[in-house]
Structure formats: structure tokens, C-alpha cells
Image (cartoon, rainbow, N blue to C red):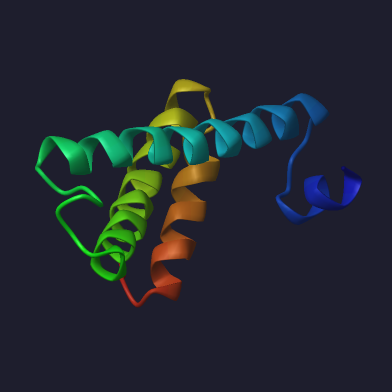
Length: 97
């Protein structure tokens, strides 16, 4: 815990707990929303080859993850931390804000 707190420049252990909670909720939510969203627009494994379906699902989940990360970070009072992390992640993909 101490190593993560130092790396992320956190002042209180509760802040670390909240941040880890946001990461877990975000990952679960992006997957839970992604599959029904694809189904709602008519994309399923029944009507599309798995070699096309799964990359689409991964791309959609990634996009949803980015949106949910900042949203849940804001809801849990850690918007500044997650906005900085979001910019760092997108920068790695060549997207600058």
C-alpha cells in the first residue's frame, strides 16, 4: 500500500481504498454495459464471426472504461486524480487533450 500511495502521491490510506474501488467498479461496469449495448445495436455472436465480434467488444469496452473512469472518479471525489490518469492513458495511445 505504501508503494502505491507514494507513486500516486496520496496522503491518506482511505484515498487509496477509494481509488482501487473506482478501478474495480469501472472495469466491471464497462464490461457489464458493453455486451448489452452491442446486443442493442444488433451485434451478437450469433450474427457475427467471433474474429470481428470480440475486437469490437474490446474497443467498445475500452471506450466505456475511459468514460466510466472519469465519471466514477468524479462521483467518489477523486476527479483530479482520475482526470490526470486519463490524460496519461490517452497520451500513450497518441491522443492528446
